[in-house]
Image 1 (spheres, rainbow, N blue to C red):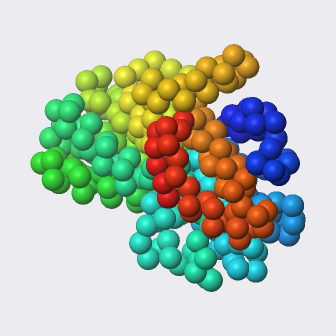
Image 2: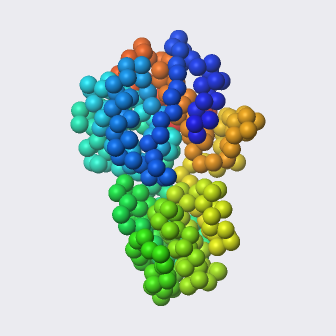
Image 3: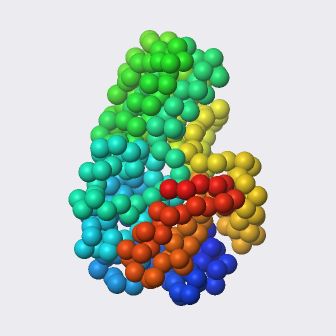
Length: 318
């Protein structure tokens, strides 16, 4: 994703209209979890640095929840933030989203869809696979709404599709035989795992597969969608399906496919999730800066005036 951002900047000669622009990559995560203190410290650093007029990111929804109230304050500018990868629906929808803006100044947008869409899509996949009963194996202890968003949307859509669902708690254990036996007793036609693979996910998949046999499909959201996770699972992961809230490379519009080809020619893995989204978020921010008068408030105003025609992700507006 960082390589994609840098390639867009190079293609534009580090310019946004009449403005010269620079870029610094900042990290907010440990593994795949946001570090709350780092998220908070980074957001304050963005606000305190006068030359920063926009942010591409953050990567994790939990970090966005911390940073949005800091960068959106009127006293901060406010500061424009465009995420390529946040999927928590509460960041942009309903009362929870409104609570993130103490001054009522919206400054955050994203170019990917949310977990409600991802969870509902998984229910439709379950129906396509012929499932009538689903077991939801849900990690407990995640505090960013990821599990709730995906699982809740799955349950709601599954009900309308005539699919029964039962939930099971996934807590960190050295062995999951007892949990696997409980899941097997519910006789599911499909297992939906929602959580982070760092929670001894390989052992969980191994024990579930041993209890359920080879025919029951396993599905997980984008937390499992990475090559290193597939390699770690090995043979027990064969046939494991994952959803990603983005556009598959082969289904991208021509502009998106062209960019991935350019990125691949630079020796970068262009097939990882959120790569075209990172490039599109960068273009959106640069275009907003180009149309602005250079102030933070003007960049935010132009961000929400965005109307992309035939971009990397197609045509859209905020």
